[in-house]
Structure formats: C-alpha cells, structure tokens
Amino acid sequence: MTPVGPTVATIPSQRHLFDMPREVAYLNCAYMSPLLHSVVEAGTAGLRRKARPWEIEVSDFFDDSEALRAAWAELLGAGPDAVAITPSAGYGISLAANHVAVGSGQRILLAEEQFPSNVYPWTDKARRTGGEVRFVPRPEDGDWTRAVLAELDERVAVVALPNVHWTDGGIFDLARIGARAREAGAALVVDATQSLGALPFDAKTIRPDFVAGAAYKWLMGPYSLGYLYVAPHLEEVTPIEHNWIQKANARDFARLVDYTEDWQPGARRLDCGERSNFALVPAALAAARQVLEWGPANILRTIAPTTRRLAAASAELGCTTGHDLHRSPHYLALGLPAESGPEGLSRVRARLSERRVFVSIRGDTIRVTPHLYNDVEDIEAFVAALASALWGKR
Ligand SMILES: Cc1ncc(COP(=O)(O)O)c(C=O)c1O
Image (cartoon, rainbow, N blue to C red; front, side, top):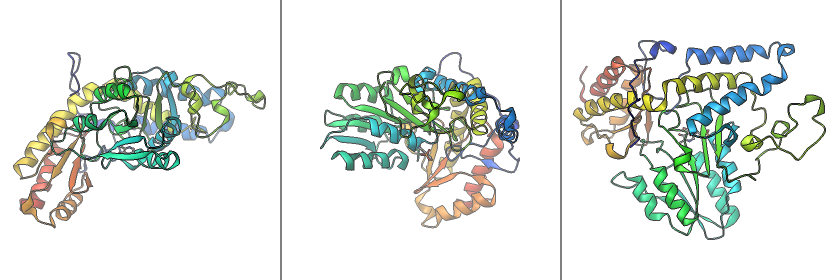
C-alpha cells in the first residue's frame, strides 16, 4: 500500500476544471483522461503559434520541452537528465528492450495479460536473442508481488512489469521486485502508464533500469506523448532513431551541419524526433503541473473513498470486487453475479451507455476508474444503471 503521510489531504471535486456535462458520468480515466480547460487552452495556443512561424523562436524548441521533462521527472522521483520524451509507452519499452542484454535461454519475465506495448518488444527481443518470454500466471489470491518473486531467479535477464495491472488495478510492489531483480542480476523495466500521476512513484526507492509510460491517462495529457526514465548507471543507451535535436549543437541552428557525435546531456539523447511539438508539449506541461499541484498522494487519497463506495454498492448488487488488498485504490474491477447469466455483461454495457455512464469492459470485468472530476452524482448514476441492468431496478 502507498504510505499516506500527514501532509496528505483530500481534494474537493475538480469537475469545474473540465468540460464535463452534468449528465455524463465518466468513470474511465484508465482509458483516457478528459483534458482540463487549461490544457486545451495551452494546446490551442501552441497550435496557433505554428500559424505564425515568424514568431517561433529557437527557445520554443527547448523551453517547454525542458519544463515538461522536469515536471515528469519530479513525478518519477528523478532529475530531468534521467527522462526522455517519447511518443508512447511502446516506444520507450522498445528502446529498453534494445538495450538490455538477454542471452540465449535466458528468461524475460512478464505478467499474464499485461498490456501489449509491454509484451511485443519482448517477444521480438526473445526472437532475436534466443531468450524465452515467460508470463507469470495471474495469482488466485491477487498477490502479484509474491507470484513474481517466486519466479524471479538467476535465470531471468529482465523483468518487465506494470506498477498496476491495466485490467483490474492489481498492484506490483516494485521496490521488493526491484531488490530481488538486482540480487538475481536481472534488469527491471516498468510500464507506469496506468499509475504515474495517481500513485506516488519514487525511482530512488524502486531503482528501476527503465520506466516508460504514456501521458494521456493519469498524467492527464494529450494523446501521443510519453516519457522514458533511464537509470543513472545506463549512460550508453542507443536511441531508436537519430535526429538533430538529440545532439550537443542542437541550439545553434546556423551550425547544425557541423555534424557531431556529441549528445545533449543525459536521457535527452533518446528524445524522439520533433519532440518539441508546439501544441502537445505545452498541453502536457499544463496537465503535469496541475497533477503536481494536486499531488499524486492527495489524488490517490481522494479517489480511494470513491472506489470504496463504488465497490460497496456494487457488492450489494451481487458483484465481485476482486482482491481489495492487492488492488491499487485508484482502480476497481467488478465481476457480475452468476445469476445475471451470459447476457449480463451486454445488458450492463447497453444500460450504462444509454445512461451516459462510461467505464471499460475488459474481458469479463467492468473496469471503473474515477478521478477528481467525479462526485457523488456520478457514483449514484453508475450504481443505479448497474442495478437496473442486473435486477431491473429503475
Ligand atoms: C498499461 C498500459 N501501457 C501502455 C498503454 C498505451 O501504450 P502505447 O503508449 O504504446 O500506445 C496502455 C493503454 O491502455 C496501457 O494500459
């Protein structure tokens, strides 16, 4: 469980900061967050800037990107030199997969049904090296940490996991897994897409080799931007693509053809091409700053009672609520009662959509992921729609 210190406070509803009609109950941040008004404004101003390129300065290629890097670094518990700007989680994980050493017959440990962007780079790596991808089976008691530790031994070259399982919020204790990985000589690669921003993270404690993620969910940013944290001991990581802005002379536009082998410091060498995106970067920056201002510990503390109330009300309707002990508080995954029959899920889907209640169906479970814009009315709308679909209560 994430420690909740004395400075942690709950945050009142922030719905007014979003473009969210009253009749919409959006409980689906794990799919994608809505954008704050401030984020839309920053993004629109950025897009407009490109309408007048004569006003774009050299500093526009660097200042916002550096501020964004610093904001994400703060959320990761790292310094800005450790963070590269990428277009997606899969990009960062592919970069990590290129770098880590996997010998023939060595294992790459993943969790069953983890998100494909943290699977395909590893199946490809295994193909190229003669390594073997092994999926840790979903543990019956929900204790992923114990299940991973049981398979993490000297045969493992890399363990690549999320902080929480994307389907149901099952939590992985990365500090313990990281410690065991170091003992076993394995690299730790983390996909933090479904947690960074809502669940406090500290690279200094976890000591991962790489942390990749997309920014359009719990970091509340636009689509098509992500981050890659790279541990300080990994100085010689090779970029996936080569471009001018990774290089030491990038700020000197008149001398870009003085080709150089020298890099921008730290993880900047791994930045994707055109990472200065004039619309997306200021938008992501406004979002990251708001997340920092709220604080992930406060966000978690505020969302937790919402998922608890949703869980309690759904349990009263006969739903299963998973392994509460091993679930991150910003997530809830509901199973329908057996009595609802084979048509239960499609009835629920139809009723929720009719009533403009938004969640995700993943496999047989209903994934419910609220945020600070949700309030009591949203909880009531969800529970009423579920009751109506399951038991015909209106
Ligand atoms: C755990 C996780 N990782 C990554 C992603 C997105 O991956 P990418 O940025 O490669 O599109 C998602 C999207 O749902 C996700 O749930």
